Length: 82
Image 1: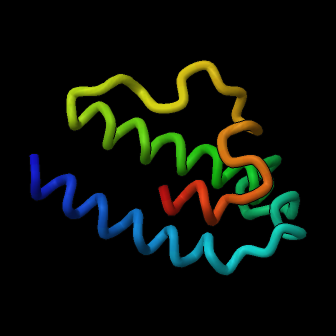
Image 2: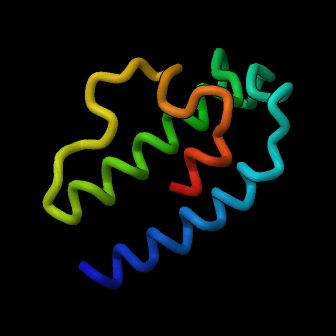
């Protein structure tokens, strides 16, 4: 399990590096995913990543009860860094 979490942490860091380059004005931009904005993709990807890590460590799914738009607010870089 530790190898899996280490691999996942490496991928999460690569995503964090990409997220760090996103400017606030780009969050509502379209993506190749039909009907999904950059914000939508970040919320989905981030929530999935946090849920996998939390559950792999024996915890509950992440961010339970929060609407997708509330997961990172206006600062996805800070949210991904946590």
